[in-house]
Length: 115
Length: 110
Image 1: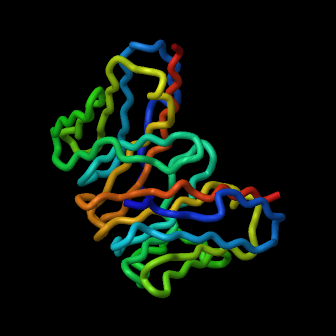
Image 2: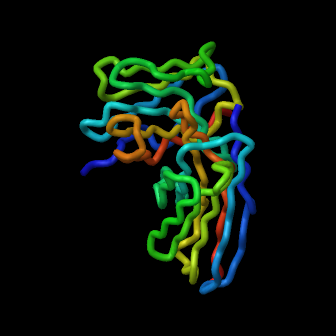
Image 3: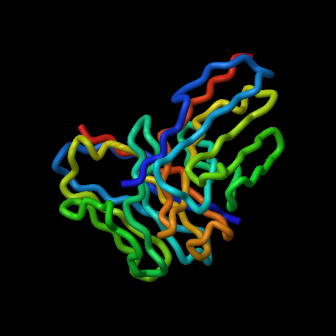
């Protein structure tokens, strides 16, 4: 079974620029998550989708971050404009139904450096 | 928001030693999870715990769900070099939201 695919693996941008990350979940997984992992910390949930609807985006900084999952499959996360404190690894994860019983798989992440 | 306090933050041990790390919270969680993260990779699930008091093993790993539902520990027996990595505890609350601890960085000296 193919895992969660993310691209790019690395991105370096200047502050105030825009950036987008892409995630393709495991086939058949209805639930998709975006996490932000700052160096030395555990992952923090940014947004959770169930199919193409948002379940939880309470920790998403909506003034600069946006995410979409238009067809209920792959998803993009955008930052516009980026700040220095956005430097982090952005992890995408997916699960069959949102329940742990069906597994919860992470991608390898996109490492963003804002300079 | 909910916080999981994980300790120790880092450990440097000799190969063959046993390792113990734990996670505590001021809030109750319904499910406790333990993940391992290697450099440049996403976290990988090691053990999931679903009931208070539950003790579960996965090879050399053993984890327990605390009776109060506010803590959990992970033990690794007879450590080997490939155990090196960052171990995270995580918990699902009643709202099905997953919260991660700050991680324990494990280093093993051959």
